[in-house]
Each structure stands twice: as structure tokens, then as C-alpha cells.
Image (tube, rainbow, N blue to C red; front, side, top):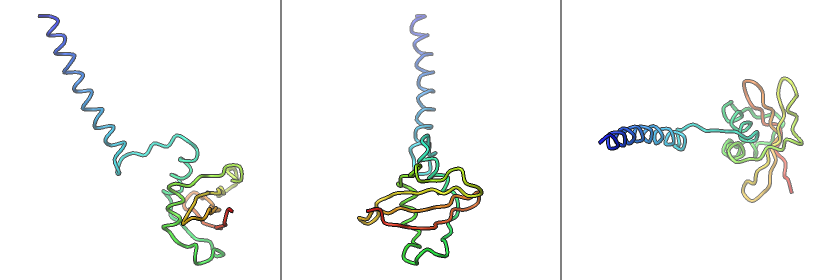
Length: 124
């Protein structure tokens, strides 16, 4: 009888733990869930996505497309070799991504309050 009582308490604790685990994993994987970024590329892009976007005066009108920029900030690769991560007051990053069949590279200044898109170049 003692074994069945202990088994019952074990199953109660296990079921409570599973319920908490389901809620945590559901929140982590859902669209409105938490985004965990551990790698530098993901952290830089997430930081840039959280700030308002400003276009440089010298940027051609054809590249002032916010949907294209969002695609870069979602799936782009930051080239840390070319980027200047120590500059003040704004850090300069080069983000590579394929967009509409062309390999493009963005030069983005990441300031405290905003990001400034300075240049878009073809990477062929």
C-alpha cells in the first residue's frame, strides 16, 4: 500500500511539472513567444529589429524598401570581419543576404535610438 501511495504522489508531481513545461515550451515556440538569441549574429539582428529604421540621404530610392530591409534583419548574416563594432556613437555592421536572386550587402549604422541604412551594394 505504501508503494502505491508514493507512486500516486510521484505521478501528481510529474503531471504538474509536465503542465508547466507545456506552457513554457508553447510560449517559447509561438509567434508571440519569446525569441532566444544566443549567437552574436542573432543578437545583433534582434537589436536592430527593435529600433526604428532611417534611410540615409545618399541611398537611392529603389533601395528604400522596408520589406527588403526586414528580410535582411530576419535572415541576414552579419559580416563581423568587415563590421566596426567598436565605433562610437554608432556601430557599423555589414549584413549579407540573398534577395530576389541577387546577393546584396547592407551597410547599417546601429545607434542607441535608431538604425541608419547607409548603403546597399551587390555582392557578386
